[in-house]
Length: 281
DNA sequence: ACGAGAACCTGTTTGC
DNA sequence: TGCAAACAGGTTCTCG
Image (cartoon, rainbow, N blue to C red; front, side, top):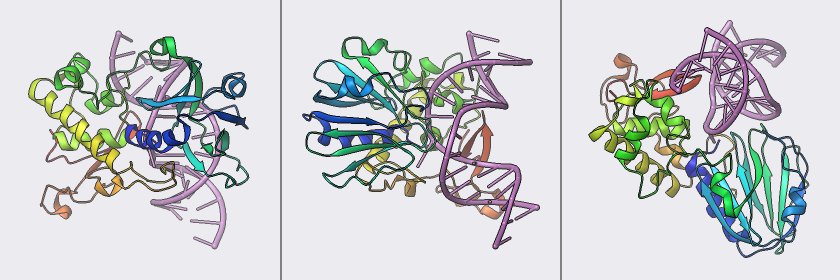
């Protein structure tokens, strides 16, 4: 489900309910997510006060006053819902973890496919944590330029689409936003990754930043199960140029769909890619 | 060393 | 209508 914009939206939604609040109760109902939840998770967190809720790539980082960091990944189908005091319904079969604050607010982690995970890290050495150590640059940072991106792509012989999904190249992109960014940059998903440098690199870095910025502003994209923490839907899905639009007209090409076939869908490394063969080279 | 494919798991949509 | 296959926003392991 969630790529960078969705995770950032969730972060914004949960931060006001966590920061400055003590975790009164942490209920773990199911430990077997993508990897087993750490032993003693509840004991480690209960009684601690949250000092910050941050994001790195697609990970949420929940920092406590004693230097513990709860690392959360939502996988494909994970979400976090805020339930007001006295308003938490009985947990369903996919409601694996509840964080209950001193204000009585429940933050409920739900994940039907269980591809998500949680782990604990230490504030002092968080950058060395195995989940975070190898991650590429944050695309919304000032430091993310065409040059930086081109350096990361140089020497790669696989398709550009596949390289951009690699979190060690750039952090936070997933299938939707890679397709959308490549469309905006006018670059073919099949192009050899290492051929992107110079002006093309700048174009691609700018397209990635722009699409992510717009998606964050829209509250992410709601396709099936994704919701903001408030329960509201994101609406960036209405701005897709190519994703999920196979056979439909490219927004910028006014050619006859019956003739050109419109947006093309191919499969790369087992995942759907959508693009306009006319505009993306 | 790199890249493609399978695996992990459940729910929903699509196609015969 | 009904059932089975395909597909889904991610990551990681294995194999060639």
